[in-house]
Image (tube, rainbow, N blue to C red):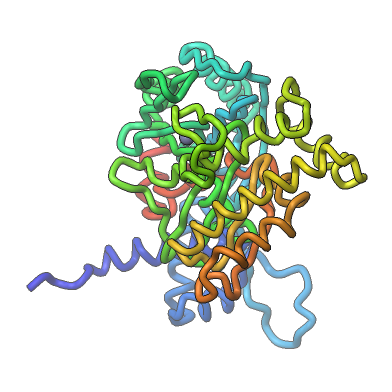
Length: 401
Ligand SMILES: [Zn+2]
């Protein structure tokens, strides 16, 4: 028979849980932590004291209580002192940010990236350069407790290797992105890497419109379509972390040719290219072009409207399939799908009503991403904080050396 958790394991778990409450919920009173964590007041006081002594949180009197009696101290994350490095390798841009405990973006740098290329040395040098510039501006008592990157493509979870191919049908090249970025940063920090749609799901689940939902699907669109699925509160990774490639689900057999070599995949019918082609604007690319097209559709431009509605129908069929399989409470549209959904909500809903099982679609909420263009970056920051939140004092001690 296995013995139960030791006192030390329980303490570690409680420290992490308390810190997570403050990280995700912002400044929280001791009395509120007591009721949320179901622990007694003296335990909360001891845990808070440990975290405060380590410099992870500080306790303050609330500004106004409006109540008689002794006010409960408010526990705040030390956002300016404890931070992570978050990176985002998007289709069109590279972003690096310093994100403080509590999710505050303290500093950020961004560069435009040419589409369809991935020069490992160049990408890594740009991101590491940004990190160094930001690091030079930090106070001496700040501590970086983790680093993670969102990548717009397939990522092997175990080692941060990314698979890049300009054309999906071609052979995939394995690129040791996480390892190289870590080496170039030279801060002794491993860089965890995640697929952008998976991290978008994590971000919306942690601090976006999906907060509080245990079953959600986040769909991310740019040139391709990716998905992140949270089932029972956990991100579905699959065997190697490649789960969620919903863009290659067939929605229109014999339809448009896809980059993967198949026809009628969700991303071939719904991606940016399909939207532009149907509107007779094949040359236009990028998020701004999508916004302009959806705006034109709103104003009554017939070609634009027909394209948005047609593509919205395919999106609805894709979502109906996902809803039947996963029974989510909420489906969230991010990236260019945010604009597309806003322009075609009626088509999407109608296809779900036609093809979705009543038991799965009743009560389903459809929403756009609350975190906007930074959703994948926010997801990378949450991934970077994950270890710290699992074992705060140990990770802090390791990072401070
Ligand atoms: Zn495909």
